[in-house]
Length: 212
Ligand code: T5A
Image 1 (cartoon, rainbow, N blue to C red):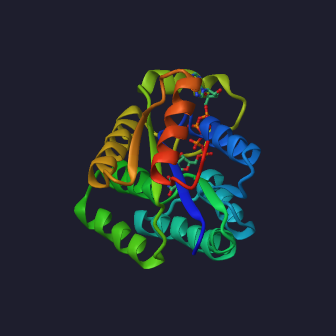
Image 2 (cartoon, rainbow, N blue to C red; image 1 turned 90 degrees about the vertical axis):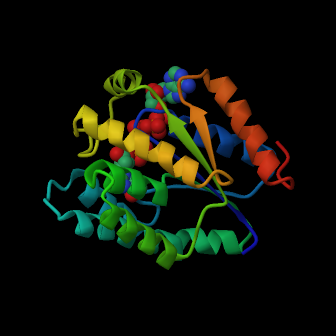
């Protein structure tokens, strides 16, 4: 594969989507061929599964919920991400496998080793790791203020209690520690312009062929 694969991760309201869009717009202006996508979702089938996972109101066992995220992910990879990488595109994905580790593994699964290793095995099986990941952190209270100001409907993960969100946030920090060459922690409370510049610099450092 000749393209590049970059992912954005972190808790809700941390500012990922804002920066995904800024990086995308900047790369397009600079003449690069980009695929901007998201999870859960990103392909027709995976978007249907997204609706089911975020707003379906069904009660799933944790392992089945994890498998449903990976079912959506496999469709997204096979139909959208891999073909784009094969065409040499830069793929920017808003959430990917680290979200399953953080939300289902550390959040719902409370860091249980059996659940974490179940997810890690699935990550190995799908066999497509991002080359670079930005993990956004934000204090819980600030994220809540931001989420209250937006008009989007609340999904079932956002409705979880504060302890759950702290476990997810700690999980993301642990993931960054476990993968220091791939992951960069971004302070989502910084000014948007500051974050944007940090990301542009890191992308260029990682991929010298991308000039921003
Ligand atoms: N999920 C996902 C799982 O449980 N398992 C999985 O495997 C996967 C893939 C998806 C949900 O699914 C869960 C995780 C999630 O709960 P989503 O619809 O993708 O949810 O929503 P989020 O990614 O959570 O997106 P949000 O919009 O909630 O958060 P963002 O993208 O981090 O934040 P953003 O950029 O939209 O910004 C939020 C607000 O803050 C402002 C923006 O203008 C906006 O109003 N803002 C800033 N304000 C001040 N300073 C800054 N630096 C700012 N940056 C942004």
